Length: 386
Ligand code: LMR
Image (tube, rainbow, N blue to C red; front, side):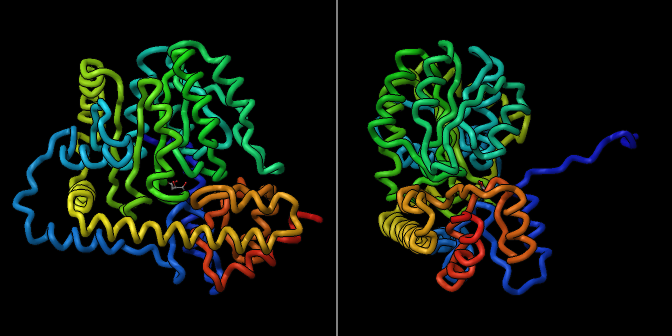
């Protein structure tokens, strides 16, 4: 019956997980998929998450349905964390940030102009999600890997070319794959343009806390929320280390009436796709956010993780110092930077040095450890060609 189906190649980042796992070399280094790793190469269950899980085992009274909107306490606490307090919003818990993007994209594909502007390069799954719902994608150059610089003029041009009612994808912080975030001044300019031109921002917030701090990482994109109604897709995968528990949320920030109408659409889509989000991760997050001690411990552990990434950034920049763009690595935010490597160079690194990067040259700096950094510098340095 399915004999005529052609096999699909699959997501490049997820494919890399399997390739790394099957490599038997003991010196292999995984700088591929975007997960945080500690100095020992482990992706730990955060201390506050463990403590919250223990409480849930004791206290949970039921596993009955939660409904398509998900856990109200989670949505409220997480909205406060992502959007900042005292903002008018409606929100729905989703299975990870991807489902939040999916619900948002579906709304955009069936309403307004059915078109979205996307800066490239971007997370490959953005394009897959938008294509899946039939959203028309217009691209512009966001980042130039050889200059290691953000093409702000191209973003401004795109916002000026977009028509009223078009949507615009923005990375809230810790841009994936480049680490190149807008400055506060640039965010302000973007916010003003979005408002003046009647554009709809879809802000993807997947790495809050991995740049400078929870507070600073939110400052830029919140200028957009202050200026214009927006959709915000947020993930707990990285900030709470809850990757496999699929925990996220989608928020809309218009007026009360529009928010509740938009929410009714999200709830209807959710019911037909996955019915209800999984409860566990959301209960863990709301337990942490509503307990002073657990919240402080979670923040401290997240701050340690992001400090580790920043110190690895400094080591890499020092190791690559003959490359005239190396200092950009210390200015970029979060887990990723995008090295100007060709596909052939990335494949040679994999084959000859057992170093795993996606083919676009993105490096997950959180996958490094002090004892591996030299091997990575040694293998990559000759490729920059000075
Ligand atoms: C990544 O970019 O590597 C992460 O967001 C993981 C994923 O799902 O692609």
